[in-house]
Amino acid sequence: MSAAPLDAAPAPVTAVWDRLSRKADLRAKAGLTRTAAVRSGAVDLAGNDYLGLSRHPGVLGAAAEALADHGLGAGGSRLVRGTTEVHEAFEADFARHTGTGTAVLYSSGYLANLGAVAALAAGPVLLDAHAHASLHDAVRLAGRRAATFAHNDLHDLERQLETLRPALVAVESVYSVLGDAAPLRDLHALTAAHGALLLVDEAHAIGTVGPHGSGGVAAAGLAGDPGIVVTATLSKALGAAGGVVAGPAALRRHLHDTGRTFIYDTAPPPAVIAGAAAALRIARGSDSARTELARRSALAAKLLDAPAPAAGVCSPPAGDARAATAWAARCAARGVAVGCFRPPSTPDHRSRLRITVNTRVPAADFAHALDTVLEARP
Ligand SMILES: Cc1ncc(COP(=O)(O)O)c(C=O)c1O
Image 1 (cartoon, helix red, strand yellow):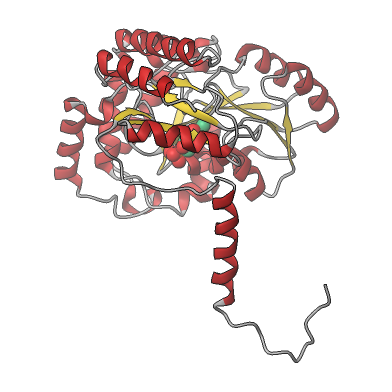
Image 2 (cartoon, protein in one colour):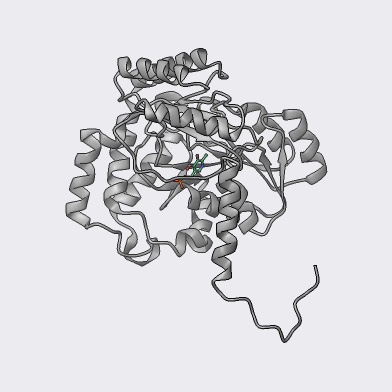
């Protein structure tokens, strides 16, 4: 293509919208349109409110009290008026519960991952190929080289640890798309032997796995290990919003002094954190709900020919993106909300339905909704 002459009139500024519209049309043809539809009264097999705590009376009561005490927003960043005793109490309780030493709150799990990786990526970063988009983005934004190892593949990890010599390896304890677990003990043995820190994103494990819901790291007997940093979101089993980075005291101090997504972001609203704190307390005592979560996940996987889930995510393969979209739409038309994951949200470029368990959905409704999903399969 020849370059436009220097004295040619610039293209009208509105040409950008035509270009974006053409791209959107191409995505639509490939079944890749994304729609933020207003949620309906459908049975929820799509959200991440695994224990149904977002509407628990104890959670709502704690949030309402903090709302009255502190107002709607935090009113400033954490270092400028945004820190309340609610934030500090949550951090201390989260660190105690997960055995991580110390914790730092963020306004989302996405920002927590950006903050953790920026702080720890002193060199190249190695990511599990299925690690969440926020971890990939974090490495990019930290200006570090990102490499991936095949999902949960210890041989590939070892090979790349030897050649790449990364400072940091990042994984999820329960994978958000596939719903399977990381072999944390083996991963940790390898990263420790190669002098790399292991960052474990516990987004889908806090509240759902480990002793009293304390996560996959604790379940693996690795809580408090100085070679591990934990990140998490409060938006899944805790039913709230916000993120957290947890690890040794030196990490907390470093994040307070230098972490851009901590320093330059308004603190999460106190009422939301108060609700999350109540949710954490309730989740600790919810062993029977975790048993029910596991039972329902196993049932969904068996019925839909999906791999065995580690917690509350079941991922049946769905053919190509168009077939996945059609399957999800048929479920929605029959009153069941399911997740539909297509490239680029699926690291292996395969499309899937994503069925999640919310233990607050009555058991009979859940079973009926699963039958509906099966009937709706193209
Ligand atoms: C594994 C994982 N990490 C991080 C995030 C980001 O958390 P948040 O939604 O709180 O930004 C999510 C979910 O959205 C996730 O699934």
